[in-house]
Image 1 (cartoon, rainbow, N blue to C red):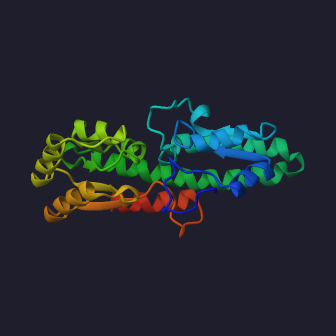
Image 2 (cartoon, rainbow, N blue to C red):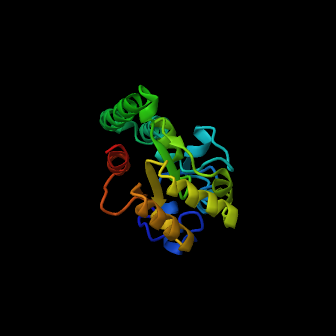
Length: 239
């Protein structure tokens, strides 16, 4: 991965000369797409002879929609198949190896899919138990939707942060009132985008005994694979 730290802002990253060399030295380039890492798309276009996989494009997710595709098992599974086929086409002699590796990876994600389905069934079978969540950022929305959780974050606040704007005083007041009502079961905090506003909201959630789930956009260094990281997030949420 070009970006392998939660201390780096992925959206506005400026690739270094060494990064461009990496793009040049590899046969296959995989980008998130959907407007998330336009810098990577531009860098990849400089080496047109390489094979490029745009995960947003192969999943028909256009720029302007939620670009955090790595929180969607559906989009991940589509990417796995495309990547596997490309690797085999680039290395025909290793077809059996890549086929076996693909089966192993798919098995891991099928396990996560089953876990999500079990959680969804658990909470949707009894409407009174349905999980209500609020978020500081929309990065985990695909996962929350799969879990059938009810995102009740004030719409004005969501629209502001999704467009990289500042929430109005009215939006923040609505958010605080919601937290003080103790209606949400979970408060999802993106720790890569913390500021005075999110700190105030986190404090309000804590004061009202609302469980706080801390997540990131980039995979923390302690994890060695995407599925391992996602499993840890899911375990936090469904605990």
